[in-house]
Image (cartoon, rainbow, N blue to C red; front, side, top):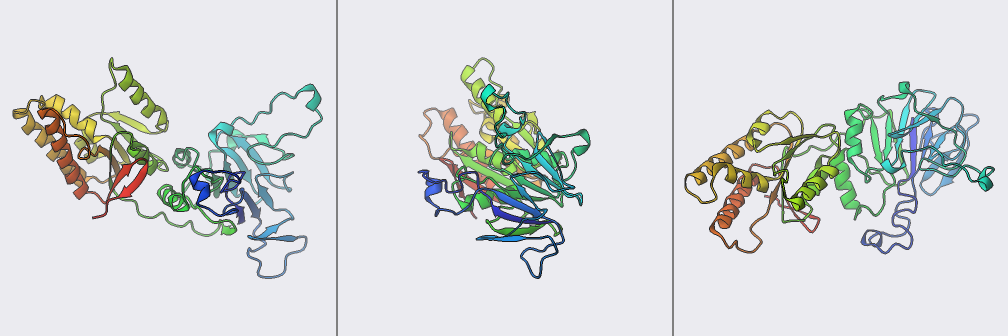
Length: 401
């Protein structure tokens, strides 16, 4: 199946006309046009290399050629050609071609409810309104049990809207090794094209330019190798946890390791913990423990550790080390054990830690001791990591060796 991707942006385009944000201001008008994807049968090659088969017509566009006979355009703009079937469900709109190819147009989660509103008395004869998947007049049926989950040949997804949805599609087998995944509805939710490319590489998505022609019969480009061990450092409210979650959003399985206390009677801390839980994908596993070494030795799925600062504070408590003495030696032993397990980790792991060396010198000896121990632990883990970065004000600053 040939696919002409004429546009890849959200409805206003990227940049959005009249928008004064920094993202739009970095781009020239028309950089990415609103999403428009045309699916063509395999009897026609794009770009055109010879005469068209009988009954085919073309119309030229700045980005290539659009077939106008029995091809299908997404978002849907009218009745489907014979032999095509379309259904809507929680994942979006699924189109099945006469040849059996499956295409998923994954809409944002807020648009999953496709039931029409009750018409007002003066609007019963009006044409149906446009919806998230296309324009007026496209006939659809609800998704049936036999429609899925089944692996798709092509997934068009607004990956900037909760990218963990892609990980869930992989987990359920909707996206497989031979599925082409293309980012659509791109807009100023991402600051630059470079950042879009970075996220796309992390998630295993193709962020193609307008005018791209894709053949779903060709092999899917391989994902770039991912670092096995990543350490993300940052201060309070720097965005380090969000960056860690972004790193693993496209994975089908993730174990989230929460090392901090649940909150107990501290209402403010409880709100912080709940905010992290609400942001976490529902299909991720969770472990609340301080036995990081044990998890690192046995984990078989990608793991996110958030974070090492709260882990170390808990270890200080467990070892009764705040006053120094023998407890300090026990903390050192736990740190040695963690570094050894980190060095031998086989599954992908992303860990978040506090960068404690940029703030005010703690007023207490226990505070200074904690700062020193965490700083040394960060250095040791960084030495054993393929990827280390500092996050400041939401900006990612790689720390190469």
